[in-house]
Amino acid sequence: MTDAKPDTILTHAGTSPFDHHGIVNPPVYHASTVLFPNVAALEAADAAPFDTINYGRIGTPTSQALEGAVAELEGGYNAVTAASGLAAIATALSAFTKAGDHVLITDSAYGPTRRFCSEVLGRFGVAVDYYDPLIGAGIAALIRPTTRIVYLEAPGSLTFEVQDVPAIAAAAKTVGATVLMDNTWATPLYFRPFDHGVDVSIHAATKYIVGHSDAMLGLMVCSEAAYEPIKRTAVRFGTCAGPDDVYLGLRGLRTLSVRLKRHGQAALALANWLANQPEVERLLYPARPDDPGHALWRRDFTGASGLFSAQFRPCPKPAIAALLDSLKLFGIGYSWGGFESLALPVHPRSIRTATRWTHPGPLVRFHAGLEDIDDLIADLDQGFERLRAAIRSGADSP
Ligand SMILES: *Cc1c(COP(=O)(O)O)cnc(C)c1O
Image (tube, rainbow, N blue to C red):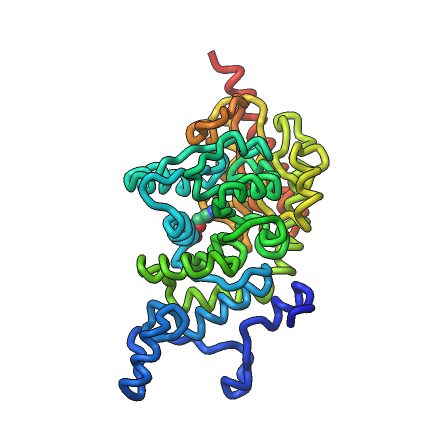
């Protein structure tokens, strides 16, 4: 299906009904031991350890169905499944580094990605530098002869900076560094990393691909050159995922496009409503024309998903708690990408090192779920009344 459009790939990739009694969906293989009919077959499988199914940990037809489907959708060569997004990130970063190497990580990376780099890669003798996500081609000044990985995430976690992916990838290629990108926010549908110089596209499939807040799953989608080192490292680490969770990823894929469209519509409506509240200073959502990353986002992305942040004007902490505690439709919790709306106070100041987050007011990250948009806005409306009451009572108290 090389000419098929994304919605068609989503609907049919990874299925082969007539290999399975005509049943539409692929079976869920629960496997550890894989039997061979004779010693010759065993030896043939052992000679190609990364390509043949010779043990449950190496892969099953279920994991291969998901990997093939996501690679086809994103335009990669093949993919490798992991038990979580973070396991995929850790495996991918390990695949290209050794002691004495240097890696460049965007300052806007997901917090646990930074902790893996600083605490684990650092312990193994890899030098880790963080860079301004908006550095663009200027990253050339930070690249060393020993730079093996340039790691991107766009838009950035919590703060949604849009990176100039092609400019950064081009600079990385001058020393042969591998370009890794966390593409979780955009999903394979709204950003095509392989068209922009990325070698490995990483997904927390836990988020939109699974899409129902009920499984942990990671994916590394690879260029042809990156696949062998990634698969080899995954096999060495024992990186794999449970078959039921892999199946939930495959099932989630089928509806990804329609869900994302709705998440994006709702997010834009909520962001626009929030932008009109006097307590909100600005929105961090590249789909809004006033976002500093809007032009780059329009150039390289084909849509926006449902996650964004709102920067509040300075106000007492209990007032934000009063707002969030009063919301009936927005849960307070980590993760995102499920069907439900979420609101979470977030604190980029404490994790940045290459750049400084100087805004004094609180930051709240919202995930727009699939609820009725008017109901979500009504919920926010009553929440802002609580916020205002809390600000007033704070001002009245001695
Ligand atoms: C959640 C998240 C991850 C980690 O995924 P898990 O499946 O929770 O380990 C990685 N990157 C981004 C951008 C995320 O939001």
